[in-house]
Image 1 (cartoon, one colour):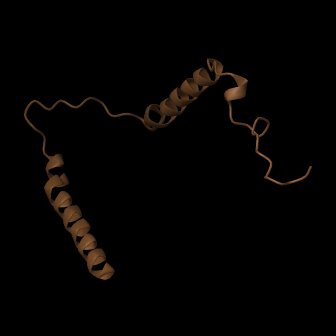
Image 2 (cartoon, one colour):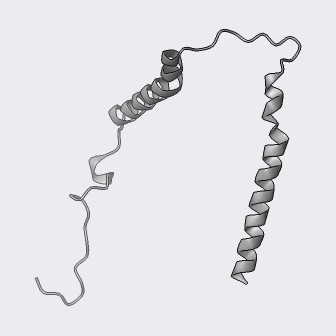
Image 3 (cartoon, rainbow, N blue to C red):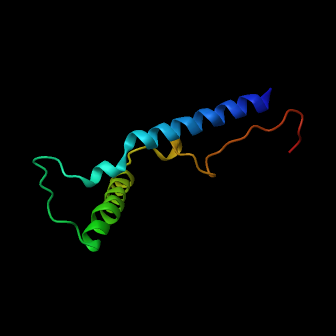
Length: 93
């Protein structure tokens, strides 16, 4: 019974993928539409800065602000210093 469900799921995934590929039709992206006025392209440095460096810097700024502005109390933080375990019943110290 499991093979039948796996085969059904695989066929559904393959069919969905095929339909999405057929519907996207990337070949139509080569023809320009009326009023289409693309600007100048980005250089490699501009592309890396915009799509790689900018998100990393933004992440670091947000993480830094969260760490600096953290006002939680030390006793509420989970560290190995404040984990308390109960002794087992009947255990002698």
